[in-house]
Image 1: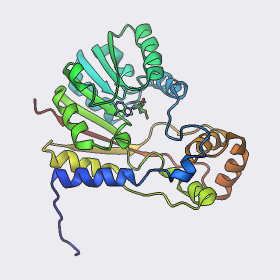
Image 2: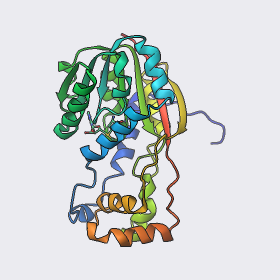
Image 3: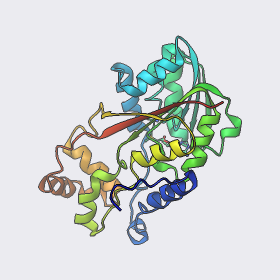
Image 4: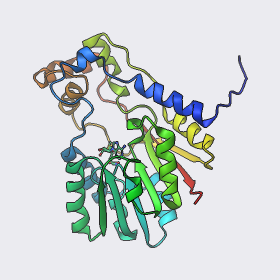
Length: 275
Ligand SMILES: C[S@@+](CC[C@H](N)C(=O)[O-])C[C@H]1O[C@@H](n2cnc3c(N)ncnc32)[C@H](O)[C@@H]1O
């Protein structure tokens, strides 16, 4: 009905989030033929992203909100740290960096960079919130570009809040980070990809959990790919095609008007912790 406000409680929103995320599952017959893990992240690619962020620090809303809460010096917990792109650029303000990630490869690249910058680091290899009990409370918590991997979002957010002395900051793409490939899924597999969940769904859930959520959106500071070749190689992995088909995928992306790829929109969500 037009104009009617529908208020849902956190439990309903959490169920919706999980169902919508589940709808992104790759059909099993396509998954069975995947040459490599279509969901995998490369530590080398993320290390390049971190090195760029260290060279030219981003001055967007995520950094602003972290700096405000850290002040001159404070401890920072980075959940889904990757190689540290969202935390290491703040190295001069970090008294201790607590870092959580299930990928040993990511944590290795992170450790190299933290050592070089002289940032005291304690790393926890594992998934959040499975390892949360081992992790100390930090002044500030950051979790960037992880949320679309998290089926139990309510439990994940609660554990973030419980580990923040001052503030929780999230950064995520406005739409699912694999959304840009929808035309290629249609062309190569005849498969439609979903649209939800989107960042607003995370905002709604965080608000329903009782957090005083604030939100700012902007254009992503980085191009997703530097060349059509790079796009094609990544698409082969993500849509389960043999890497030998990269030229064909690149040509198709051009035909479908997908290159140059518009920049993503990124959303920063933050709230003062309730501890
Ligand atoms: C897209 S990367 C983002 C890395 C980094 N935060 C950044 O902004 O560059 C996502 C990272 O989250 C990690 N990850 C995925 N699910 C996780 C979970 N439940 N708990 C902790 N880390 C997770 C992955 O291993 C990966 O390193």
